[in-house]
Length: 379
Ligand code: BGC
Ligand code: ZN
Image (cartoon, rainbow, N blue to C red; front, side, top):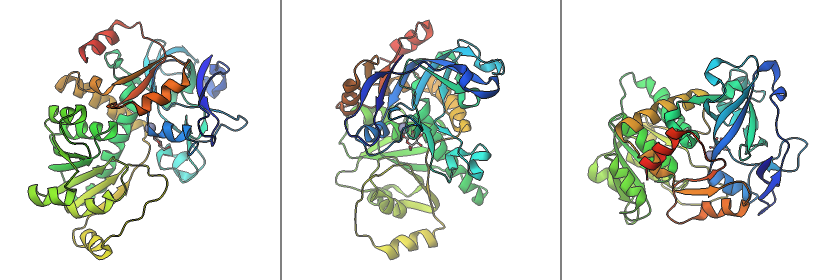
């Protein structure tokens, strides 16, 4: 079957290739599920992998099939697969697989202390192929009504995990409920975090470089959020003018922001960092002021990566709520389709496309009538 792969560590090695079709017998205990891939989203991690900066091949292979943002349909199940994954079910796979640490043994591989094993990224082939096989416990069923936007569930799970980490940590405060939040970055993750916060009634300000109006700023405002260009201002200045933030979510990958954001947090506030920043960047900061802000305000900074199955399930619920309260909004994130698995260069080009929010590969056009309808509705 067809797939798109790289030779990890070799820049510009992205290529289309033929790989063996997987079989459900590869999964023990009759829990195997064969999934026909419909769409696969691509993101900055795929760009880093294709630049040779990130990613490892599965043991014994010299290539890695990429793609970790999946959407597919179940086509075959083993005898011990639960009924909610019956043939025909729309599914999204989680990304990380258990290693050997104590967290992995509890099913908390998103908190592994080992080198992470991630499909399409680290040590396991991904989903950018005609089919994949997976253990039922790593698949999340979606209602067919989400077929048009289900490929956004993996990035949605990243937003859900970051926000649920903030909630977990803030339980220390017994009565904490965020009223005002700032999101830094208006890409896919920043927009999805904004959506989830708006669904909870939080007042959200989004900061990003580009001057409004453009597609992303319009999407923020459609949710009732406020968009501010970070050109000529910073979060500390915004907080000074409009009040400080109970929660700040960093989704831009601009690391100096960490130090700006700490000063814009309200007392007891929490700063969530989700940007993966390779390479290095040096800046000068007032370390005393930074320390003082954290100490005297009982403020918290937390990093977050990957997501648990529960975060994916929360994502499904919030996607349904989004379709109810902001119909068609999520579909507008799907800006940049690439057709089929033949042209690996087109995948790379889609990642660089100007004015793109989410690039994705249309691996197999779905014949489900629901999907056509919801897709048309979002144009
Ligand atoms: C993926 C995560 C993964 C992280 C680090 C992100 O792009 O969405 O699932 O844990 O990269 O590899
Ligand atoms: Zn990703």
